[in-house]
Structures are given as structure tokens and as C-alpha cells.
Amino acid sequence: MQILLLSGGSGKRLWPLSNNSRSKQFIKLLNSPDGQKESMVQRVIRQLGESDLKGHVTVATSLSQADVIYNQLGEYIDVVVEPERRDTFPAIALAASYLKYEKSCADEEVVVVMPCDPFTEAGYFKVIEQMVHAVDDNVAELVLMGITPTYPSVKYGYVVPDESKLKGGIFSVKRFTEKPNVATAEYLIKENAFWNGGVFAFKLGYMMNIVEQYIRAVSFSEIRSRYVEFPKISFDYEVAEKAQSVAVVPFTGEWKDLGTWNTLTDELSEHTMGNVIMDEESENTHVINELELPIMCVGTRNLVIAASNDGILISDKNKSENIKTYADLLQYRPMFEERRWGEYKVVNTAEFSDGYKSLTKQLKIKSGKGISYQLHRHRNEVWTFIDGEGVLVLDDIRSVVSRGDTVTIKKGVKHAVRAISDLTFIEIQSGDLLVEEDIERFDYKW
Image (cartoon, rainbow, N blue to C red; front, side, top):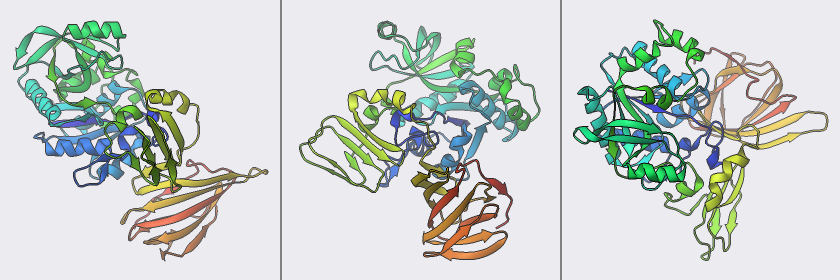
């Protein structure tokens, strides 16, 4: 069995902790069993490992999220990167092609597609197990999970089951209804409709037959190079609603989309994280502070306060669903990113009257990891190492660097650094153009 996790979205509903590279599924706010904090995607991976599902996991994502996935889940997980964002059908088609051509999976192998960030319980994975058995037993070509609704939501699509059961609590599907209004949702619930949980199971050959309707190829690389030929459409519209043989397995249990501050704070065990002081009279207030500066709350009511290098949010919890509208107005580079080698945050930017610019970062590189061998055309850099030890390369010359060392890197000089132990340093960029795109990378053998 193969498990495909879909990871996408920009996650601006949780601004300022989320941005175009750190979506909601990567924010580490949930408690893990070891007492540490884990992200939504780390939680799902952990739950998969604790379940009876023994499938191999592959993550389908965009280029902007690939590094953070490797950083949080490890280098050995399989990641399929879309050449461009084109909705869930193309993403699943590309990932299925990867399983077929790169992993040499058989057409009879069962594939489960699921989101990477549901907040759920062990029973959810038991239902996925039922779905796998249903596909194996040829109950239907496509089997999906139906979440038992708890209220007439307008955020989810609905699946209306046939009254007659196919087998062991599994229903055939009568029809789908996409994100209705409240009145229609209430009517659908009376029809015993389920929320569409975005979990699908099918045999690989079934999906590859659909792929071949758009692209006939003999390799994964060819399909990826022709990715634009897939229609930009959701899996629900392109596959599920057109399927001739489709069934639904109900799930009744804890299931939430922690996509807004209001829903997320309901699941946080602490009301404050980071450098925060809150008086005893404050009520129903959550504060998450990633900055070094303190936040003080006195007599606050029903607020979510979040602070990061990207900005500071102060919102009534009941209004927090409206954040994305305003966050979309803020167009600037992410001020915090997780990379395959570690993470960085921007701590200062400045622009002077003659157009000259400076940008200051703090970078943390994990032991054994390193940044690529590269040069810049538009900026100089000064690195000051403040903790750890590493190997520095400047135009092919190696040296060891550690706390207290400072290095100046001029435009056009090839450079790289690899951490011997966890390495922290300050980088000051200066020049006329300070963008991530001003990088030329070169091969280097450590």
C-alpha cells in the first residue's frame, strides 16, 4: 500500500506565523507525546506510524514547501514536487506517475490519498484501513471517507450516500454537492450526507488510466515535463464526481480543520507561548510570541495575539476567519523560513536614499548539513559566527570557523559552509538588489 500526503496552500489564515513558505501544517504548536512541540504534518506522520497502516509515505507538494518538509520529516521521505501549482488532480496524477515509474509499483497496488494536516484520532486511520480492504475486495474502483457532520458547514463538500449498504458499513455514493449554503447543508444532513474529508483510495492502475487520457508517456520525467497538459482542476471534480464505481466509508470521531486561529487555539494546551506576561484577569486569550521582545497582556478578553518576524496580529477570536483578506494585502518576502539545512529569520532591513540596501539574517544550520556552493552578483555579505563549528569554503579554499570568527564575502566569490556541530551565524547582506533569486549554485564535493 502507498500513502500520498497532499501538502499545499499558503496558509495566510494563520498569519503572521504562516507565510508563502511556512503554511499552517508546518507551525509547531501542538503537544507531542515526548513533551515537545510538533506541527500538524509531523502529528499525522506520527499517527500513521502508530496505526496498523504499513504503507510507504510520499508527499506531493510545491517547490516552496519541499525544504520545510525535508527539515521536519527527514531526508529519507519521498517528495514529489510540482513544477507549478495546478490544483489537486494534477498533483495526484503526478504523484501516481512517480509511484508507477520511479517506485515500480504494480497496477494492483492500493493508493491512499489524504491531506497532510487533519486534526483527528486513531479511529480515522482504522477507517482508512477499511477503505484499503474495500478497494482490495473490488467493492468499488474509488472509495472515499465520509466525515459525519457535526453542524451544517458551508466550508466542506458533501457526499450523499445511497440508502443501501454495499458491504460492512460501506455505502455507494448517490451524488456530490460542493460547499452549499446553510439551508442546503441542513437539508443534506437530513439526507444523512457526509462531509467530504478529502481521503481517497484506489488501485494505481485506475489512476494511471485517467492520467493516460491526458498524457501518454514512458517515464516520470516526461510526465513532469508535460505537467501543464493536465487540466487545472480538483480531484473531486475531475475524478470523484465522474466515477462510475464509487463508495464511501463513514468516519464518526474527532476531526477538525485547524485552519483559523479560532479553531487552532481551541486545541492549544497553553494560553501563552514565548516571552509573554498575562495577568489573572485576562480571559480566553491566547498569545504566541516568536520574537525576543516581551508581550504583556492586562485584562484582555477573547483575543488571539501572535507575533513573528513577519508581523504582529491582534484579533478578536470570533473575527479571526477574516485575517486572510487583510494578509493578502501585505506583499513582501517571508521573514522566516525552514530550509533543508535548518532555518533562518530576517532580523533587520534598511534602504538608504541612494538606493543602497542592507538585510540582516540569523541562520541556524543543523549538524552535518550545509548551504549550497554559490555566488551572488548584486550583494556582498559579512558572516559573523556566534555558536558552533563549521567548515567554510571560499573559492575552493577550506577553513574551519567557530564562535567569534567574521568573514567578508564579496560579489562573485563562491562560498559555502557546512556545520560540524549546530552552527549559528549572523549574515549581513548589502547591495543594490537583495533577493533570494540572486544565487548561482555550483556542485561541490564535501
